[in-house]
Image (cartoon, rainbow, N blue to C red; front, top):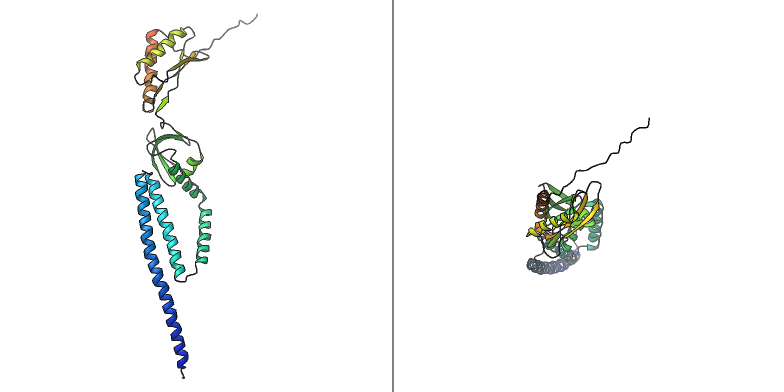
Length: 277
């Protein structure tokens, strides 16, 4: 078998040139990888420190640090691959198609994910608040990326998807410093309205938890079927809302009894008409 020495030398030279070219690209790519990893690490660390100082919600804090780290590392991988000669256009297109397919398959989860980001970013409520949402009232135990966990007032655990919370009505019950307590009390039509109003005012004045400003509103709200109804509206600190509500009902019943004011039962007048003979 005859071997063409010149041809062998030619191929060896090509292999050497390719090796030098690829080796140079590989070395440069490794250098870029090392420098890029260091820069990403520094940036993520600075972001972590900044959000800690700003006291960003813990869940949002962890999520943002993770998402920035993953995103920058993915970009670094694409840069590394392109530097060593890998065709990245088809890779990016494939990843985009896969992302689209996953997004269509997980529409509900993505809606909850987006809702969680909105809640954590705009903070309409936070852990520890009492909210009224989706038919449930309770303390916010934890705000996760996909769900919010409530503990109801009777100590039940409720998990609500964040998509519903971000797109629905949410009442943050005690977020304000003060609240108005709305109560209705009825007296008999035979009782003195002015006396009853004075008794109601006296009970409110004796309660130190009732704020002096704004003043307590007390007025006749309705002539009902069996009673004359008073609407009583004291202002209190939010933490005192339920204690004042319950204590006022007890105190007003006792005060009405002592003043001889009747809280009537439902009554109906029946007129009997004799049948004509």
